[in-house]
Structure formats: C-alpha cells, structure tokens
Length: 154
Image (cartoon, rainbow, N blue to C red):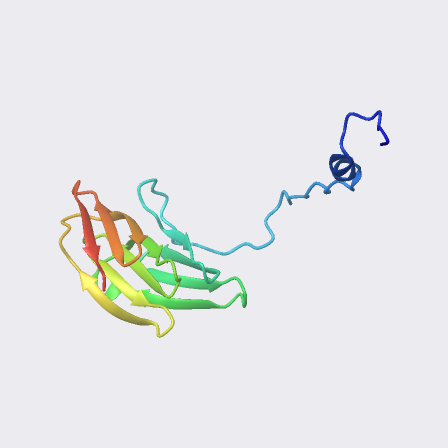
C-alpha cells in the first residue's frame, strides 16, 4: 500500500488544480437605449415588465409598446387615448403570451400579444391600478383605492 503525504485527496487535488473560471466583465454602459418620452416618473406605477419570450412591455402615457430583444422590433399594442385613460401598470403571464394592463380609471385589460387583440376588460377598482401580479391563471391587481382583487382570468 502506498501513502501520500499530501492531506488533499486525489479527486480534490484534480479539482483544485483545474483552470479557474475567468471573471465576467460587465459593461458599465448600456448596450441598447430605448427612447421613452412619455414614461411617467411615479414610484407607485409599474410601467415596465420583461416577458419569458424576451419581449419588453412599456407603458407610455396612454399607449403600451412591445420591444422584442430578438428582433429589436417595436409594436404598439394599444392606445387608451380614445377612452381618455392612461396606462399605470403592465404585467406578463409566465408564458409571455398575454399581458395585463392596469389603467388610471381602475380597469384591467388583458391582451393576447401574439394576435395583438384585447381578450377581456375587468373593472371593480375606483382608482388607478399601480400593480399587477400573475400566479398561473390568477391575476392580482392592487389599486390606489386600497383594495387588492384576486381574479381567475381563465
């Protein structure tokens, strides 16, 4: 039987002597800048959300725009100007095919972003909707009226 004077086992020795991962370099400047002229400066609004399909939804004034990170294409999803309303929150489903849009009038609009069609409108709130959150088919909406609605969007 042979003895090794090194206290480190052969498996650990191989692991320790293997090349180390190089540290990642993270850029200090953005690689892409998107113009958002009507982005409201309000802490209580949630106007930007990134989908699992790599699409960024942005609420600008009365409109919602979608920016694809794959193609850099911008699509105007909706404009609430006709109803004299504005976007106050956006939230993607986990799949990234549907987007909930909260408004200043307290409505939630659900959009099929593949077809660019509105699927449903839900009322109930008496003030602006500042936050939206999905859990499967369940959608929670929080409003300035101090009420949180939990709804099944199926």
